[in-house]
Length: 617
Image (cartoon, rainbow, N blue to C red; front, side):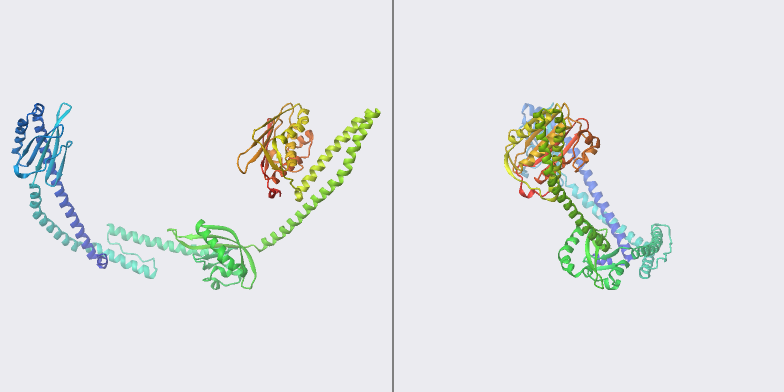
């Protein structure tokens, strides 16, 4: 049917459409007439039967109340005057039939069941229920079954004149369609002719002659305006294409356009200059031909697929490196970026690749790599030198400390007490210098990768008690109080006990140094589970730090503030070494502080340190 309609001329289609529209309109009007007539008739008859049912119910109240069936049947007999009523009955409140009326005794109609008030049409038959009430009490129900055979007769009576009217209307419609179709078809045919000329010649300057100001005239006017717009856009498109081609041709970076299968569709001048191929040699070839031979198989089988998959999924990919092979055999490193071209429907049309020659960058990276290696070797040499110098310095320094102790004792024994203060200063300075050298030695060992862990099981409670006892004199020196709190389930720990003790001692001694007449708190907690961790929190009520000071806290040979260094002393190595010790054991040290109110250091370490955790990042 559809193919038949497609083969018809525009004139016949117009005629056919007019006839179809007229036929449908007449059919709809006819159906609407029948439906309206039927609905109206049913409504009228329904209202009439409803009035009869309500009247019958009202007249039957006394009969139901006094249980007089004969009286109720007399009331029902009054319905015989209504020829449409075939059957009627009165129900008691319990649903049993109290009295009934049958127009013909031998009809054997099925006995109805009492239902709630309502009506139901079944073809030309109406079944209606109405409640009988005395006040608010339902004492029974009236049921009426009425038949209206004249409904079908009304339909039959209308059919013949309606068919005649429809035939006459369709005849008039056909005559009018035959006369008027050329008014519509001629301009359309002219429009089709011009469209064909425009399509074949691509000449957008042709215009259709407008002969009227109606919708067809507006269509032709719109078509002419569209041609003018297309002509302007075609001119602009040509100019833009030339402009874009000029930009692409003058790009310093290489531009390669691929189809969805990775076949080269277009390249710019930079590609030709870089690789030495002509554009004709490249277009139509797979992208793989540009890659260096040793890279090609691997790239095409693994990386290429992953790149294409990422391109399709993400829409773009940036900064991946390839090795191109020029026509003369040179291997050229390039940095590539790609993006997917899609149409409005989301279908992939191709891939745009931008490649940049990074030969000079690679040379610079190689130079930087060599320089980095030299710097690392120099740093290791420095660390080794510091370690050796520390060893060389400790020997005479230990002698100075030892002799100062001996001279101090001898001066006290012979009564030369005036020498004792100076000897104490020598002894204290030597101890401080020895601690500094030990810190430098530890730091150089860590940086040289020679610091080792000696792991063992130890009891955490015992360790904390030892540290608290050792640090107590330093705490009391500035009139501070040491508060230790710990959970009851600390148990044992597998780690380097010496380094854990040194970390805690460094943190507690710092807290004691920067706090006066305050409190230093050590809180120890242990996590539960297989990979449990121990948390040591050292808090003080001292001078605190600013955010800028905390940023410099873990830098070697640096204190939070120059004035702090002058007032409190120290090199800043203690915290650096403590953090590196914790990192060697798979943990870390963090800090939080509020200026003027105090500082909290948190040490977290695994309960069981693994040997592979030794190297410091």
